[in-house]
Length: 243
Image 1 (cartoon, one colour):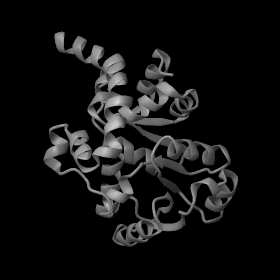
Image 2 (cartoon, rainbow, N blue to C red; image 1 turned 90 degrees about the horizontal axis):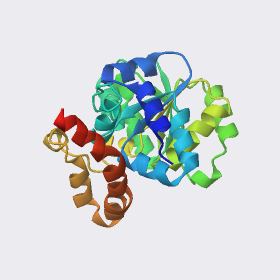
Image 3 (cartoon, rainbow, N blue to C red; image 1 turned 180 degrees about the vertical axis):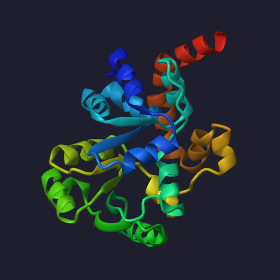
């Protein structure tokens, strides 16, 4: 469930901007970074196990303006920091040159496209695991990642499973950096639609995605997320607006 303690802990661990995100990934210390959006909070409201997964992340990011508003209610002022933009920076630049990465999740052809697009960045995908996620064993995955000398594990699986398997792999002994990015790899490789820049600037990316996949997302946005927004985010937003 969502508690004041969970929100306070999120604020303590919140990465403030893209530069801090990249610096945390480049730091050699083992860690897990979890992007958090309103859907994550809706899942946490229904599942104590998933709420604990958020608590156990070393860092979180405010992925969406509702989470930005919630973090501001705790006295910090983060920018919107998303997994999709992290993947875009990874593909466009060379700040991760020489790092060894692994991809967990996404379809096999998506992983092939992603590895090819990373060629110019100097970041090498040395291990990929696709297939049936029910067959994934955290201890086996951790051993494989250690064997290949992986620095960065990119978990391209939607919540709640993606975040929870990332935490289990870390607990099983992986000593690198785990980043949960959901569907960002699909979008970066052109296998899923990414909202245009102007849509993101207007903070209506949720509406764009709803228009793309109304059957899948209507329940998520209006049945699962809207009550959480009204209960936990909107009161803080109104209070700030009156100040």
